[in-house]
Image 1 (tube, each protein chain N blue to C red):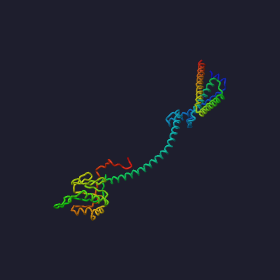
Image 2: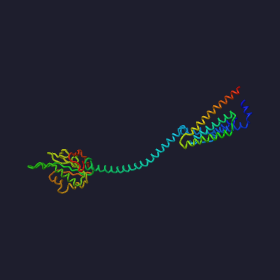
Image 3: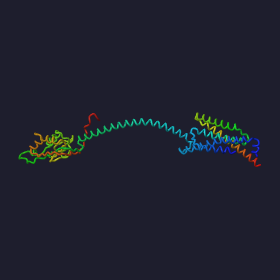
Image 4: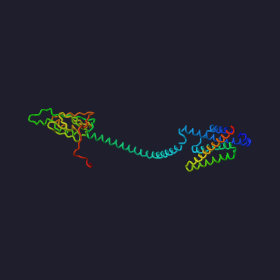
Length: 253
Length: 115
């Protein structure tokens, strides 16, 4: 037997030394293997990937971190820009609000919005008095100039909006005479004429009734005039269109 | 004769008892150490089978081989190259060589013992 020959040739001590040395190295190997296996398990358990891919991941991580740093530096810049935009937007909003308010006022002024407020109505009609013999019948009927006179007096007295028989008096409104009827805003009108005005009622009434005024004149000629104050009158919106075929704004194309 | 097995069991037990987490950067060194340990063990076994075991050669071989392999790995880390793979391959070749020799020795013994 080789063992016999070996044991015979070598003393028992070297065998023990061999075993001890081998045991030592094996202990180290076992320890390292177990430690490594545990580490690997841990990595797999926490990251769910084998550790051999970790270097690749580390590279990716560095890459991402660089990208993140770049993006973070962008955040500051973008926040600044956002603040600037917000400031501009706020300014724009106030500007827009102002423009919108101006627009509302201009619409009201142009007459394309219906307006309500305290005011008066003036009702005019042809004379009830039959014309005397030989008298011109024109003297017993209302003329466009009579209406124009009342409207002009109302404007002068501070009326803010006026309508004639439901037709808003706007900048382009003319009151003219077409045969036996009156034309205003391309609408033919017949008596009675109802003028509605928004404004300070007492002031308007006083202006109309002033001596030598239009109402006194009409009354003197026998035309029935009825002036009534109202707490709330409505002046409708202008229903026509504004067209500029020849006129253009100066300084613009 | 039981000492190697006891040693192995002891090492495994220690590995389980003390939770040592090997930092990722040192995984290479662990691999080398494990290979060096296996190589040394097999070398020692072979030497024993061939009746030429020497404790000094055994231990110095383990220490020097492992150290040099670790040095290679360190240089590799410095250079950013996987030089430690050379050590791993060298250890692996030696391991297989030793296994081959151990196999032959065992077969030879068996044949002798059988006869």
